[in-house]
Image (cartoon, rainbow, N blue to C red; front, side, top):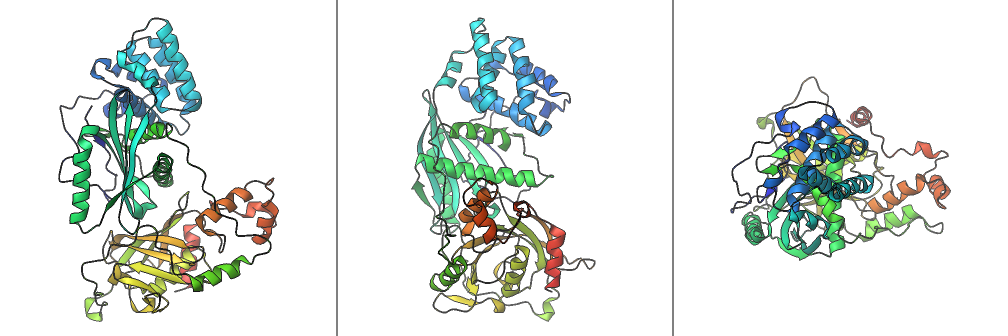
Length: 515
């Protein structure tokens, strides 16, 4: 096994962690006999039989090796079946137990370690029966029963709150590894890369990371986190990545990288280790819908009294603060920009993928976003860009007129990003990233929506946490506030509240009505 394993996102557009010092130590690569690498097809039980034969116990030296082997097995299985747990229970675990070899006992222990629930129980009992029957195992296998502990959980962030990396040192039975999660803030804070680094290489890797970011003009700092907060941040990033991957049928996780297991296996391992950390308290937002309060009035009042909050990542200022000139007729027709607009903090993710002319004004873009998210345009808004803030002109807040600047002036190239905040009370923050710059298609009418996920929250429901609470209450007819929330939404049937609903064609039709 390589001392470091990492994953590179499939489409090459995700944020990477670059380093002047290599994070990967390459060695001789063993040929892999797993079905994924060999292209062997067959029933899940057949795959379990092949894997039981291909595990090389002599090449393993510590619990991490068998955990990764088991995680690879589960990751491969997940690509074969959407409901893999019954297959594990009915075919894989019995197949390994029937082999009654040291390799089979080790794999059962590994499956128990990286799984949970009924699978962990079944694999643990099967491994115990093999031990009672006298099947041998390497001495280090007993270390899987030692609890994992975490040290130095931290995050690397810039002053605006953009998190580049989450990292912590995990220890068990005298062995130590650092796990680092590279964040993709343009993708709802989803995990972009997972790095598994030997502890004695971490100082070198950390210094290289910080040096590289600062050389690029980023004032990055390291912040210590409490274990529960670290667990929450990591699980949120993994969940966001899982949600995005499920939403895109053309995306399959890389199972194997040149230097070790790919993202899917490392994510399973990391989730298992996270369970050793304290459980984070559920985040709650104080209810805003008390009968005595007029929520719409409060939100409107906050719009006037409060500037937008500055939490989270904002576009990095360019070295020149001069706004580039607008396109002229001599420059020709503007291209089309494909942008992804994601509601920041929404779990599951809520986003829209729009195709708009690059020379669209930010004021016009504001209108299109309102339509795409079914907002009512009843609150203030602002675009945060590398060249300043644009919205309704307000010298006190430092907002310049959004009608006088175009999208391509502030975000001309693929990878450029903006922040759009709507309603300074509920603080609906949207991350906007330019995904592609396209040639105009004369057969297409722009603007249009070419993708998205889930309905947007209703206005004035209390921000992302208030909306999460609203969804929970409306899904529970026995909740004491169920009827009150239905009345607030003017709904007589909870089935009419459909947070998972999204129709790109309907959004496109609505956008083109506002041309």
